[in-house]
Each structure stands twice: as C-alpha cells, then as structure tokens.
Image (cartoon, rainbow, N blue to C red; front, side):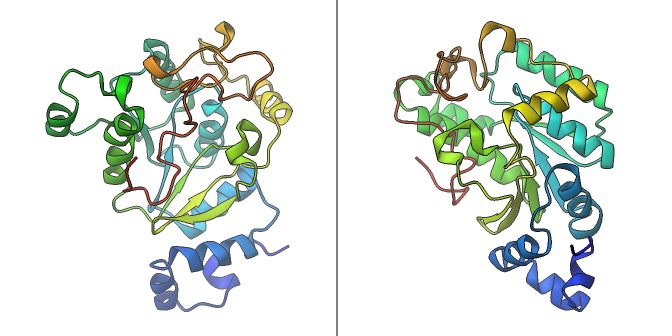
Length: 255
C-alpha cells in the first residue's frame, strides 16, 4: 500500500501540486487512487498532516454520531477548524451537546456559523420559512452560510455513512464537490463499528438519542425515528426531502 505523502507519491513538483488543487475533480481522483482502502483515522491522518494542512475543515452537525469523527480528528490535531451551522432552529440539547464535546475533546477552533442577518430579514422575517418552503429555509440557514464558511479551504470532512439512508449507499470516501475535495472517512463504516468505537472511546451520546432521535437536525423538521425505517426517516418526515442541501452539488445551488 502507498504510504501517506500525496505530492511525493504522485511525483508532482510543488508548483504542479498547487495548480492541481484548483482542479478538485483531478486531485480527488488521484487521492482516491493513492489512499484506496483507507478509512477512519488512517485516512484522516494524511489528509490533515500531509495533504491539506491549514486548508481543511470539519463540518459537523453535532448530531447523534458526530462525536466519533470529532474524536478521530482531535486525536490527530485538535486545532483543525470545526464548522457548526447554527441555524437558529436547533434543539437546545444539540447546542449543549456541542459545548460538551468541544470541551471534552479539546477542540480549539470550533466555529458556530450563523445565517446572514440581512438575508434572514429579507427572506424569513417571521422565522417560519421552514413551514412552507423547507428547501428554501435550508438554503438560507445552512447552504449559504457553509459556502461562506468554506471560503479559503481546499477540502472539508464530513461524517456521512452509507448505511444512513438510500441516497448515501454509494457514498465514496473521497469526492470532489463544487470545486473542493470532500473527505468522508466513515463512509464505509457499519453502525455496529460506529457503536463499538463510541464505547471504546467512552464518548458521550447525544441526549436525544435515548428519546428515539437517531438523527437530529433542526427542531421544527426533526421527529423521532420510526421503527423499521432508515436512520434519517425522522428528518423532514412526510416530505420528499432527505438532505438539507449542503451535500448536494453545487453548494451554491438552491432548492
């Protein structure tokens, strides 16, 4: 197996490597070839230390499974920026859990990113856009803030997994989206493996998990997970919607 060290492994001169970073599709394909078969910390280590040092961020919902990815990142470098999209609609339990994990894991650059206030006044003055246009609400409160927050980064890390829903069944570990490389180090992990890793590390659980919330998003659009359905069935229940939009390309696109 090729060891970490993307530029050296691919025999690229530094200036060529810099130029390649502009081409997210090309660099994602090369990374996928070099680091094929790696996941979890084994994949995160080269991404954080050799490939994108200072140019990569973690995007976390601080949901029911978020602690594992954050713990893996913190074990390598707790100063990696962690972006939380504070929509103004989260459960109080999620905000408390965020603060608990940041402190327990020693994360030193956790960023709460909020929607633009002028855009909220213009497009959602009564804060009820979620009722008649959930896609537009997600775009305003998540997609646009994330696009701003990722400016200046070449890559970002997510905790998505294939078992979470049908639309994620073919999720790759490394992909290119909207001009940036996107790393999904837990894509191929099973639920059993995630739960075992939680237990092995003694990670705290999201407080709503005990109430049947297997996936937690904004409070108005999240219900407890129905028995026998996929983990995200409580998100936008009853609607033809399963993603908020931050994982749909292009990131700047709207509903």
